[in-house]
Image (cartoon, rainbow, N blue to C red; front, top):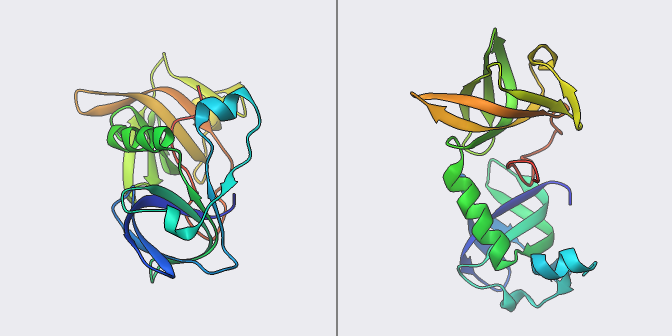
Length: 195
């Protein structure tokens, strides 16, 4: 879907939506007659068969809905010139909120900024902050589904980490290593890998 910003709609007007992102920022999503506005199919229907997103009218997006906008992001002005707006299925939106509530408790995601023995520091776009996790003998490492080791984690790698906080320290159970980050804006989604 390209670069995007997701959040809960707090205002609807004739030419823009205002949203609050998962990280708490307020973004203005500008749309026009050229913006493709669609409704994400419900997950149970989509998994049973390939259901394409359904085109909807701009007014069908209301305050309280969760949307994702893709297009030209101006991070300084906190605005998006939207090429596409997707109204997220309510069940998926609930999962996204739950995921956000568990960030830093059961999962982390971001770009590695330092590796010091078994301690790894990453910077997350979720909250624009640094986080640290530790690996132990029970931690599993994967890169594109292939097993790797802690030594394969390099500064600049994107990682998704699952685990738990024990005595004030985030202990990783699973670390999934990705490639270097794409340039130009936040990733459209950061969360635990699909189960």
